[in-house]
Amino acid sequence: MTTLRSDVSIAELNERGLEYLPGYLGIQILSLAPNTVSSRMPVKKLHFAPNDFLHAASVVALADTTCGYATIAHLPDGAQSFTTIELKSNHLGTVKEGSIACVATAQHLGRNTQVWDAVVTDEANGRKIALFRCTQMILWPKG
Image (tube, rainbow, N blue to C red; front, side, top):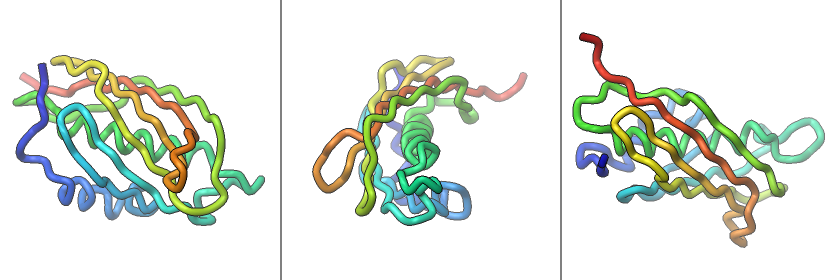
């Protein structure tokens, strides 16, 4: 079973995404522990769709980033990287202001795949905004 890597830190994960989509969206990793990672994203106009509801892609970006960083933190020794091979989300609500939070929890940490569930909530009151699940394929060096 894969365990939390000692060479991955919250600071490293936050720095990793600065010049990429997670940084642009304002995603911040808050905690890192065995089998779980938590994050948050302050909600700004750029996170909304033209109908003035939180864009589903913004919610998915928070959940997918959190699960992806959780995968990085739990890669088996010798693994090179990972890629998402499946994801699903159920959207239950929205927010108009404040921040949304995410907690990703490992469901399966295998040699070749990992499965993560995430719950996205309104950070102010804990109300569920979305449920998310993804499967990650572990990538190994060629040869």
